Length: 148
Length: 452
Ligand SMILES: Nc1ncnc2c1ncn2[C@@H]1O[C@H](COP(=O)(O)OP(=O)(O)OP(=O)(O)O)[C@@H](O)[C@H]1O
Ligand code: SF4
Ligand SMILES: [Mg+2]
Image 1 (cartoon, protein in one colour):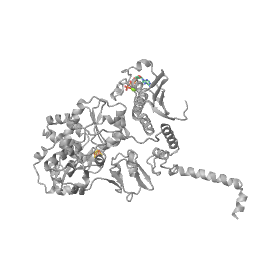
Image 2: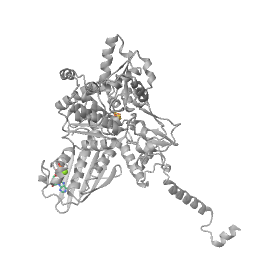
Image 3: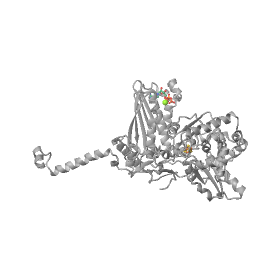
């Protein structure tokens, strides 16, 4: 894939930094608005990015999020160097969560983040190596506004 | 180009380009061009922050002059409940309304009463609403415009009830025209406003319908005359005056008033644009789904903090709060007849007549591929800038400057930090040019010779 006819931007997310949590998804939303992307697609992207971002903040140490945008699709990649996920199938289930009591107090930990990313993406890949980290690959197509 | 009506005007005579307005504008809608502030129409949401920030009074709210009254055969003043908060504790709505009549209005209408009716409608609507939550109050037109411009996907979460001022003036015109045998257009309904933004909601309603109001008069303009007019109003007993206040409606003057008087459990009250933006971001991310209703006001503490009010906003906030507490304590509920309201509710009496549409900002380019390319260019330009948001270029931040350059509205050389770089480049070019004609690096002896 060439970056020639597209826009690429990298963001860093720091684990545990609840103060800044959500900033990356807001920045991405603003970029998409300036470009004039359909608002339903923006919302789907913002939700998927936000959930991915929050998982890094809650479970990992550090992550790099890359936005890549072409006239046909939005791709978001998140690589983190956190503890990884033992059983992805289980983690993907609605309601599964290892969030701490403190996180639940803050309104997280419903176990809906990953399923929500999947719901809002047109394509979603997740891979993880326990002890090393987790990688998410999210794609949202631009030419089918409002289909999802 | 005049697609949008705005409630403010910048007077170039008075403006001396001090950038205060540009810095406070929450939507980056102001630029300094040739030493004067100018507004980018599509970005402005009429919040009025710039009016308060300008030290020269160069930003002028476009409310109606008092003289407009003579155009009508019968005139009615419809004051925002925020007016009730402008005078001392002892001065209650009945006296203020009487004062308005002394000022020359044929009648003065207690809008708090209609506010109470609409509070009831909000409660009913919340009960039957099955769609996405939370619902958002539409009492503040700036908030509605913020959603239209920056959160188009939340439009369906704006509560579809009409505003009390519109419902009231529609009703007043109908009744008065019958009563006096006048045409509706011969009756002038004037809103007494705490902010300029209500003016646009009259001239250019957000939902594209037509307003039933004929104008808006600034509370700050009417304050002085009203104060003297009230001197000759006879004082009624305090208790009796209290009994005519609708507790459900009086709270509309301040943030949290609707939620409190309706006793909504799952509600939030926010004021101030920056705070509202944080809350709206959260709604957009799907958080706050367990909240039923959000009361949001652009001005700090709600309409009592409007830019056209007079009293200190904390004092007026307190006056309303104390009033509510007193009414609660005295168990006074001068409120509309619920059975009658249910009937009207079913007839859609309380609902907006038009539909709200989004009003997204124009993209960098109509062509998607070109827009992406321009956004990339913006990023590249931004990376070369000092990122200190000094404003000398006439744009509020380095990022907006980069955008202005991409849009062709600014030149890269407008950035003062580009100057040394440009000098360097120019002098290099000059050197190269000289080198072609003159020998490289003259030796000391050569220089000495030249001096002689
Ligand atoms: N980046 C990650 N690194 C390590 N573990 C993760 C990561 N993302 C998710 N998990 C694990 O997967 C579980 C499910 O994640 P998911 O986002 O679906 O729910 P949650 O974060 O627990 O709750 P919610 O997203 O609803 O606040 C998490 O509890 C966590 O154990
Ligand atoms: S909070 Fe009230 S006074 Fe302020 S802009 Fe909104 S409607 Fe006007
Ligand atoms: Mg999660």
